[in-house]
Length: 134
Image 1 (cartoon, helix red, strand yellow):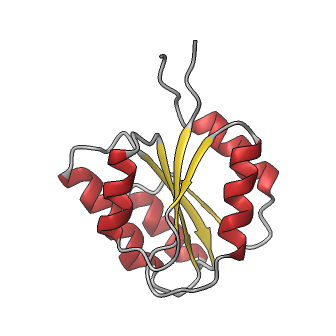
Image 2 (image 1 turned 45 degrees about the vertical axis):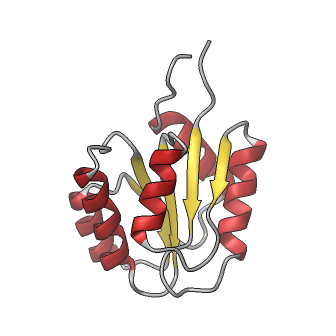
């Protein structure tokens, strides 16, 4: 029997706009995934600690503040330091195309920009996040 995909959804940094991340969290949950939403104003350290404690398969970050390069980079670094690179990192926000390419090079698996549908996000997670066998 396959276990359900576990996703930690986080809103790191000072950005206080959380409507979109709540919509995505609900869509993932409605699609049968286990979702932990960490709330607003999380540090990368808090996000990674939560993901490890929750035995998450993926971390989804929502960043609209313009600090996406710093925040995604730090999450990737912390996962490497904790030997947890098997946790897939994806996210969304207002991210320029050139930054998307650089973030993907750093190890961010997928970035969704404004206009992405919840269905496309759910399908991407299903197709790209492995579920452990229980």
